[in-house]
Image 1 (tube, each protein chain N blue to C red):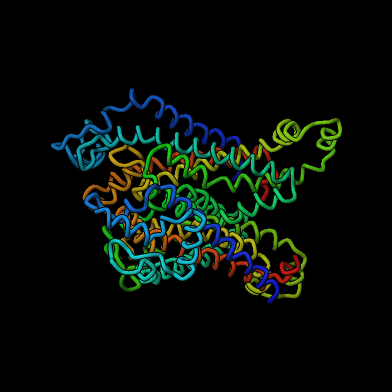
Image 2: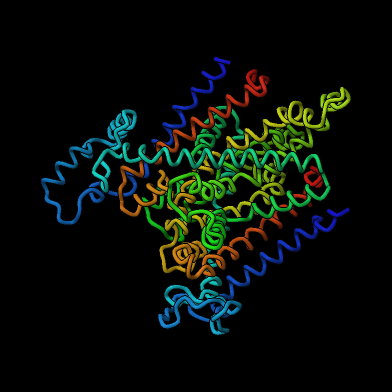
Length: 305
Length: 281
């Protein structure tokens, strides 16, 4: 187990190096960084000082190394709009984003797995037909419109929930369901397929023959064996979920990293954008690692590969 | 057999019907749209659609905050969606297929290089990539296609790589190599034709994803800058008017869901048609 984890851990720096390299390339392709820091009324002394501070007088490879060193020590420069270190600005809002993504992930996993199991158990009967058709149709639903519809219905018409912002749990409901909709239809369909395959296996037949109750067969015997495709799918989709979180935060004015980054783009606050992208990438890489470890706990055969 | 109604023919026909209708709308937009999509009429702003109280037949789907005709804007919006969707799909398909072909056929170092690169890129979400690119270069049709095209190549690379690796040792490929076929000849004349059917299905479904992505980027303000009539822009404008004029966001939402649904139907129908086993599951 330890060996597997360590081997898997070796991929982490490679992925992060890749992200940093892409960021650096794009940054340098966008033209002179001095233009983003100083306005038209700049003096030559200011330009010279900034050139030295940003190490723009060095060669590109040296610049890249300096940039890597800064990134490793968490130094992304000062935020242009807030006047404090960019990394602080980003980390301050990380809590809100983590809360949103975790809630969405839980909703999608629990509802998705239960609905998918219901489909498998009632294969080709009414519940299966209804749920699978709905799931296929939901795949065409743009989540940003879903969010707006939910606000119109639950917040404006029924007045049950607030329209936006962050506060108590009632603020979390609509954004979390909107974000969960990114994964929900696929989790339902994958669970259905995987459960159908598992239910045909010999050990399930044995469990039924032993006289176990339907619930025991489903949750103790079938589900753990059907779980791996679902976990892998969630792992592959974490990036998409993070992208979805950016959109969801924008719709609901949720004060997380995503909304901060979008706002920073329009403010040309490059340090914050860079810090945000890198933090989100770290989260994705770590989440993927966690998924791989989870997979190998659930199915020890994977470790042998 | 309740399911026979939703058989493969039905899906393909329904999907193709929606797609053809949308393409016609895009192509004939200047003739079909009742108004200029950019023409403002501040005296007639925020008029509801004809089926709501206060709506008139003058603006069938109502007007937006600047008095622009919503129907005309939606019709012109099909142009951007279809063009960006197909062009970015084509770009990522070409990039990914070439990378996958080479990686699968050559193997060894080149395979490691290409596939590890694809893995690393997989961990990097498209929206983040698009945000950086949009922040760096600004929004234009060309940039959108470039961003979406580059962010989707890994899917094709992985798919083609897997297929080529399994095809490589089949006798018809070995025969082609043994009578002196060069790498490029074998890849383009013997391997590629085998992959095209599956590639077509994935590519079709990806157009829908690209259209959703384009709309999402426009919605965030990272696509074509306003007042360009794209569905994402209309939706973003509708969000700000959600309370007084909900029809703006909803009409754009329905337009997006319709085309994405049509493409998904067509793609899934095509997959079941080409691979009857897929339907069994």
